[in-house]
Image 1 (cartoon, rainbow, N blue to C red):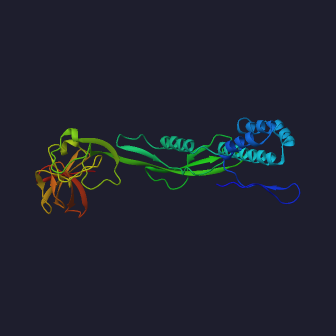
Image 2 (image 1 turned 45 degrees about the vertical axis):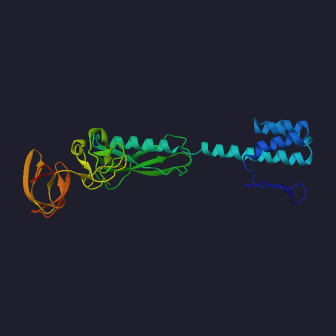
Image 3 (image 1 turned 90 degrees about the vertical axis):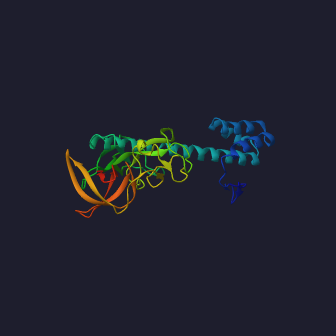
Length: 298
């Protein structure tokens, strides 16, 4: 930001423009070349360590030009100190997120290896006065939904405030990814694959959850490193054809249930496909275990 020289408007009145922080060092150097020794020492004191009494004494003995220079330096130093003080007076956002997570972990049941806890996020630009007493956390009143909660953070100090932070349990599953870039026509081995846990929401249709499914199959097109592998991208011996009648098998509490269904897409052995339950008319996802059997996944 450009600087401007102070201008007088009336006896003894000075109006100063905003000066960028980089001006401090330049102003001290300028004082060293143009001002008398006491003024130079005062300018250095402003930049390094503030000493009010010495500075005021130097102001009295300095020339008019140097007094204006020293005043500008002190103005910028004061603004910098004020900004640092203001930052120290604000509540730390990561600490609030950690407090909300601790409260969510307390109220939710123990997570399985197929679940993770998602809290917030709290917008980092949010500015709240630092609470001089411990911030209180609790589940906000209202309708309770399984796997979801609204965590209330409340400050009861001299500057009270409260904040609501959403928390929810997210289901995850194992997902097979390309360990490196795959070329079309490449036969996959275990070294070409890696497995990660991903949220169930947003996964592409036909994703693979077991690397053994992909071993021995051929990449139907170029696949980038880290991409989630799907049965549409891999070629192999086709097990199920679209429109084919299949037997749907579901395991519910140790009881095996069989029903008739129709395949809605082609599929390879051990790959996920969409099928229609002819009894209910619902469309569900299952794994092709053979040319006739599709295991329903819950």
